[in-house]
Image (cartoon, rainbow, N blue to C red):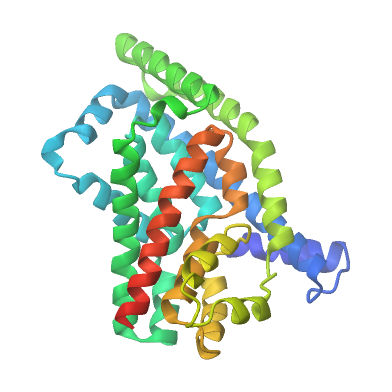
Length: 325
């Protein structure tokens, strides 16, 4: 879907800067250009579309519907399943996260999507089948969906809305005021578009610095996987290998398709499958660049709670994988 951005990034790095594509610096710059353009485009499109939807569908009504107990938690499962069909890495999922929050979707439901989206997608599923077989793939997909669903339920129960940043609260307040105006005056879409456009620009202006810093960190870390260290510390005999693999994965950044070949190498060298998958989940689901992007919409305390809950769920999944396989 974003192949044309990759072509432009390759052209800039190779033809404009004349850099060797195999060098670490060229890979980092290529990654930075590609992900920055992709995420900003996603953010623009999603916020614009959510602005149109919000102008016609009352935020309070959407929030109320998704918060009703009669759904029996299915809203978290639906959000996780939606994450499966969106082929985004953790940073690319953040624009949708912002759009969901702005649209009045409960925070826990939004978190369910944010957790599952980078972990499980059609590309990762295809690679997983080829590398580890159908049985392992099914267990992985089910565990990824359950991880997002359970994390979303836990985070919703903690009632963390108060830990959103003042910037997000102001965005929500503006959206509610604009929506009231639209509903009262029954304005046609062409009258609403200038207000929606202005809202998009305000959000982009607030988020762009965090996108640039976050992706720059990801670019520097891209491709840096010290395998020798992993082989030494993640052996089957190490009882704490799973939590260690999860924690040391957080500073790194890649998507599922990029890290799966590394997982295959680790497994081939004797590292238990559950430990290797916990490492993979940590890389794609909990990255430092993602934390930098989320800082604009969450306080440090909320980011810490989010990372802690998901980390614990990943560790449990890793141990279960080791027991099953």
